[in-house]
Amino acid sequence: MAVSVNNLVTITNTGLAARLRAIRVRAGKSQAEIAQRLGLNEAWYADLEQRDGELAASLTLFKAMELASLFGVTLHELIGAPIIAGEAVAVMDLPDKVRAHALRNGISIEQLEYTVGFDLQDFPMQLHSHHSINSTR
Image (cartoon, rainbow, N blue to C red; front, side):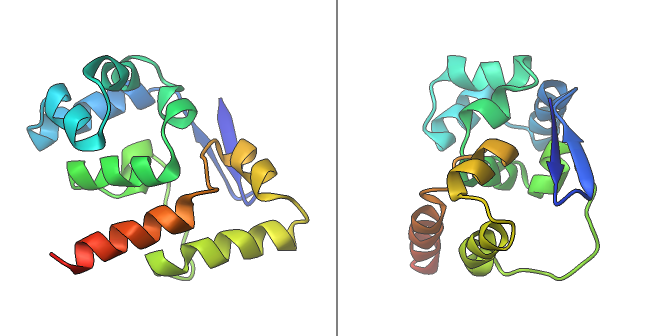
């Protein structure tokens, strides 16, 4: 499955499962450890490393970002996407940027979710609660 982002880059899921496994092994983490940290059962996490389309089909964008963080890599590195030169965006500004993109392109958040393969509805709340948790540490 290929996903076009802003008509600038195409991300394919081909080889993503093997990439996840290699990154996890390089990070020195077990499947059980990662599953537990993500709040998934081990079989569900194992599917991520066995099926190329599983990450986009079963994880929210927030969970994918959390997974990348657990491995000590960026989301771009995790999914093997090229980094597009441009404006840097603070994580807390992402919800507004996503809404603006949808509005600018005349699509609903649901249509954007379908296009990118991630659940964005709760992203602002997840982002806020994640920021609040990390701010208190």
